[in-house]
Image (cartoon, helix red, strand yellow):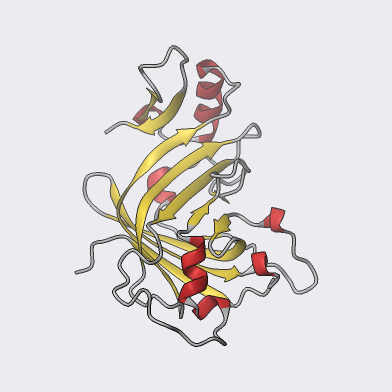
Length: 230
């Protein structure tokens, strides 16, 4: 069975997909008490395992189907937080504490596919660098729980090659991530631990199952995240 985490860009020149070099799945609480999932994915170079690299190709290929174009952009980064914007997928409901073990049984949808009349990149849940800084939307994320706090994740979505001026979400991707571990909940850097404790207690069910973890014990600066006790 395939156990290498990969992302496939449907009908691009690499049908065997692209190995995922790094993947981080984390949570975040914002100043209003809303809780979000963030995902960050980076591939290896598109051509890393291409045995046919260097072969001549037809001149009239579209950007999506041209290896030469893909090679010019090297690798993909798909992320809700890499470029600093607060994006991601909100996972809690108003006036209801979030039970992590229950909510993770649900499928998650970004519900951000633009209409033909309105397209604002700021409304999208994720940014993507693919063939330049393109756009992605209509994400569907599903978790499958395994042992030892690990999960397999299936993630699909649609892509518009907006860097080259095409705002139509006519391309698709599918990522299959194996043995992913939740990286914990982050909170605003200007909060004290006491403030974070107060906010998390109000929004998370079973708060006693969590603990604050130092992000960098060797640093003189104390920064923490909230993670489930192992």
